[in-house]
Length: 273
Image (cartoon, rainbow, N blue to C red; front, side):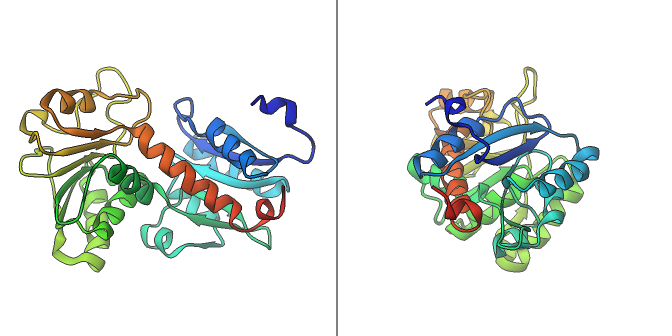
């Protein structure tokens, strides 16, 4: 569908904001999904650096035809400040990746990266219940995936991050709900059944691998959140070993569906079409 042929002054706008932004695949997919549900809406990407984020948020909040925000790296924590309310999940994580207008014109936020990742992993053959999991990355996506893995029933979740303070803060928050199942991890995946990269490592040529792939078990399930390149060096290495894998595009599709559900559930978009 050529969306430009259907844009009018009545079209509602959804912003996707990040730094960088060129790698995101959400605009076309979410726009198409919204239109398939009868919503006259379009998703537009915005490249916004962290120092400029407050100005950007003030601008889209003032614009009456902005009905939603999709949030990507590195803004998932900072954007929570603009929310007048969030889901319990987002409040616990302190991060959001999707917002919609509420009836009073404020912003209601959620974080659906985690449930999207687990849904995609299950579709790819992963059964997390009772498995030992290792995850690299304690940022916005990593935090959400960590919570979702624990809620899906993993027996242990080890978290590795290049920023020890950020890692320890996430571990402490998760231990309040899940106790000793949450531990400090490393780049060594030996002995783990589920191995997840929730860092940007692999987006650029020359990035180091997030794990020592020589220690991956052939029976391990390896997932990555990166969508570009579609097959990261980590996934390539895991496939050579014989591991089952999930690429970022699989997670993206599940997250996209969850985002659309959230956008049309209430507020202005729910009343249109």
